[in-house]
Length: 255
Image (cartoon, rainbow, N blue to C red; front, side, top):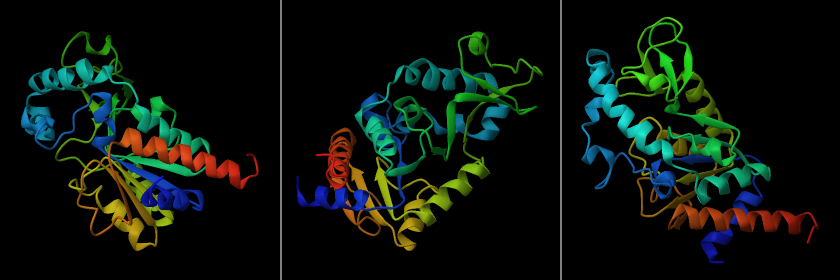
């Protein structure tokens, strides 16, 4: 185990309230491309399709693209070792919550329980009139655009569109956790998306140790991160979780 990994393991083991902050990069190895970058979705699809005004003015056109992207293709994705490592760290009592910018539900499917969805969740649809929530299903998508079974009005994916505010509960819980934590683990996010990118900075300003797991340097690496574990999240997080669990057992006299 190299020096940076040892420092990261020690920080997590000795933490009282460690949290994780994840972005698109953690799900890339599950087959979900990021939105930004050379191979990102926005290099192939007009991001205006997720503009709130566009959605309401052209729901049929918007829903045709949305269904193809988020419900025909991404819906087949499965959690990877990085998602499972965070769930294991939560089970061991070290990670207290996951703040995620992702909308893919993979943290839940991996077994994480306390999750703050900063940008919502694609598995839910919300009625634009009555606010009723529905689970995405083949029956819901029998006709497009999908309509609320309760009132008959237009359904929208329950994730944040351009021009839409962050859900208040997710905002409050995320920033409260950032202020409280003594370790924050950044995984798979470049730090380009506002206002989510303020979360690590808030944690840092409140004295937290920032551990970053990314394949390449991000906007956090130089100014915010204390420990940079460069590489694939499936490898670095798996090793981190394994070594933390081992250290906890040794500390408890179980080995």
